[in-house]
Image (cartoon, rainbow, N blue to C red; front, side):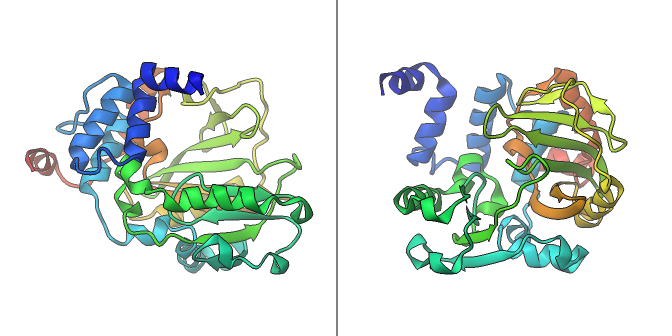
Length: 310
């Protein structure tokens, strides 16, 4: 407990995030909040007048690209129908149930292994590998905590503002490791896949490697360590994955499309408009400018200047 108090006192980011959860910044307008958080995370002022880096442009999109239709796409339940209509239901991980609260869940109807997720945020995932050993009290406490969380307020990501808060159950699935599912996160810009991020060892020592669409290793990192010596085989279905990513990202300035691969079969993960909420560290710094150059913001330069005045 003492260590947590010391971290709270000494670390301004931890302090800001904790106070955000408590609602102390709920009356701040979105721009003021994002400028404050951006400065804490990057040490720099947020440039909305002429954004250049990937993170700066993500903040711009959060403030000015506000389509109510995005809400459906970040909802972990409703997005499945949207994606199935776009690319086919064979890429969708089956939903085992959906409920408004934990007490509605009938565990007798669930298989021995499953995953419970909250639909309105990022991070509310509870994995059950053996139902006979499930600690329901622990699961309830975890999921209720996430159901109470107002994810929109933590990063002012507009699509999450009106998402229905529910719990869904999905099949528990693993890849060749037998322990986890590697995320293949495809970064798309105006419907064109440009980069693939692969997350692995998430439950031990989270790492992520970056690759070009030709599967060449990119000697750079985003927030988490990268390991050039860790060999991740090029998926046999990579070309098909990129085609699916392109279909799903058409019409969006930037959209990250996430997939899993199990026995060379592709499964859809999620759609993400604002990678890392625009606060993750790009190393080297010039890599943040390079990825930023891929993101063409909607509207002309005159439009950007006008919106800076609003």
